[in-house]
Amino acid sequence: MAKTIAFLTALLVLTPPMTSWAGGDTRVQALPALADDVRVLRFDPHGRGRLVAALGDPLRARHIAVVVPGSDVDVPRFGGVLAMARAVHEAAGRPDDLAVVAWLGYDTPEGVGVDAATGRLARAGAESLAGFVRDLPPAADVHLLCHSYGSVVCALAAPHLDVADIVFTGSPGVRAGSVAELGTSARVWAARASGDWMKWVPKARLWDLGHGTDPTSGAFGARVFDAGEGGHDDYYRAGGAALRTMARIVVGDAR
Image (cartoon, rainbow, N blue to C red):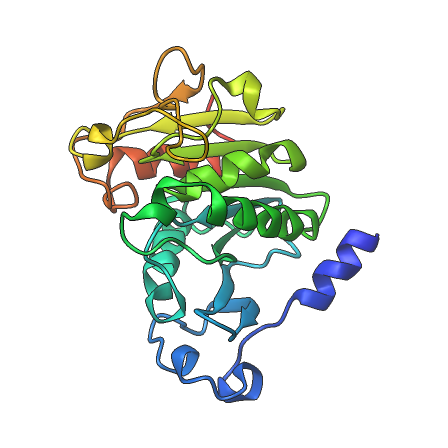
């Protein structure tokens, strides 16, 4: 009951004018992707900003998918994360019992520099993600869709989450040598497109530099699925193999 109350407190439905809720922040007002079917759950204007929005109703959904993005995302570029969430929602057929959340709840790395190669931002993101998931309605099955550096965030949060599925796409490594080391009872999935440049990133770790084992490797033990021939940003492409599989995962139809 306490979890549901906390979620109700956090849940705000965005209706025009946006300034009535967003405090006049021009970064949110300028987002054309925030259509009438988008529910804004959280917004923090400080720094680069945090923004969490949903398609579908998380309070009524049996399944809640949470899209966790990687590098180079902030409030002005939130439309890309929301497009990923919308692609999943539409590929799943927009069922009434599914909500898909676009979660920008952490400061993402900029570019491919030190922040992208270390765990500092991922550790902060993992704490934020764990808090968000704990506040979701307890009866729902939660499915994490973790792209690129977002897979590091999800992996570090995994021991603290009660979720049904964790999906890694385009991962640089997840700071664990195997599914067992993630410390989760969730089903763990992984995919890498054949044209993804991430395959050239060394899967090694020295102190805090690097993210370690490729979750698509046989030794890791994830459920590996086909992602086709696309590139690093093509996992959510309409009609793509990866998107079809993720759409089945988030409604509980994939095995």
